[in-house]
Amino acid sequence: MSKPARYNIDDCCVIDLSKHTRANGNLTVVENNLSAPFDTKRIYYLYDVPAGEERGGHAHKLLQQFVIAVSGSFDVIIDDGNQRRTITLNRPFKGLHIRPGIWRELNNFSSGAVCLVLASEHYDEDDYIREYDRFIEYTKEDVR
Ligand code: TYD
Image (cartoon, rainbow, N blue to C red; front, side, top):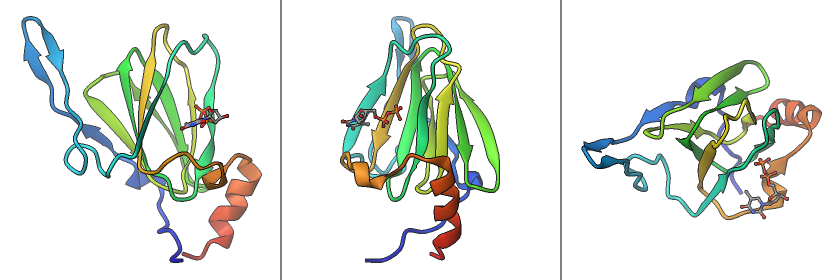
């Protein structure tokens, strides 16, 4: 099996989505391989996150994700083992593309925040790296 490509946090971009503004409300569209940067196999969402709680705290070996604050706001910390950056998502028409091999933490959830995640693969616990030390080893051992 081919090894996954190596990515860094500069490869993780915020993508502008369409916004159809009407007097009776707004509408945003996400389409596979058009506005979304990959074919989506799975969708999940985080909600009712208590104030002060964190989510994430892991990396994926192969999975790509597209993260949208469809309601409220939160911060996404992305880390490639060399650099770390905090990106605030607070608009339902902007999505963050998280590449494989990037550590992420989500925190600073506002009241009522909903974090929609489009994922390129089905759920697979073996694709997770859940310890930061192990993630750092992974970034070094993987010549890719
Ligand atoms: P996890 O990905 O660790 O959540 P987060 O990154 O938001 O903190 O998943 C939390 C739990 O939910 C974990 O026990 C596995 C389960 N889960 C599924 O069963 N299927 C899924 O698609 C996802 C994303 C999680």
